[in-house]
Image (cartoon, rainbow, N blue to C red):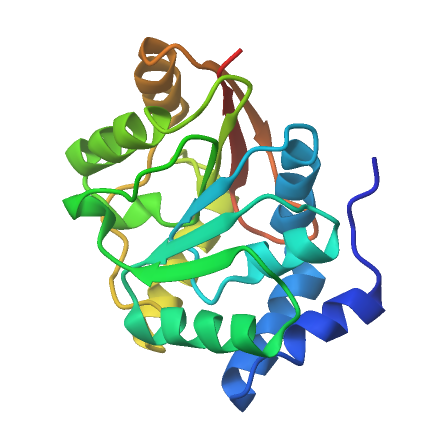
Length: 221
């Protein structure tokens, strides 16, 4: 299944961004990052709602809508400025069933029974916080649903070192509020999510990027 959107669909998403730096970010991100097509491929099979933890400006939600994904999508992020952008984009779009809210995942997650997505935020949590977040997220995965995570895995590769440098650059340029704290390893997902009754698979998701990103898919059968 090809879930890559054509340029015309990507343009419709980027044009929803009012501010120039957000539009530039969305153009680069949507054209270069393989995660949106990968997550869409995983979600199109089961018509369940989605909780997107660490949603940023909501690009995944708009990508899913452009791909024909109809169930409700709730975005959750502790960066109020990014949530404000996502809300403005939703208001300008013709998309229905999208909601975006501000909150810190360390203090608890919104209620949900469906799919859960966590993209590129685990490195900002301690190991204990990662375990707590994964347990809370797993409890919100419905029968037939998936917990989908994109993260850098810690190892001794050049890709890992480049990813760490990229995360620090995001912090220094103020795109991310926090610096990386702890990068997870494969054993974390297999132990915590396996104990929660989910079947776990892990695969590289590099695309054309130099980063040590992997896609973790944990399914409740």
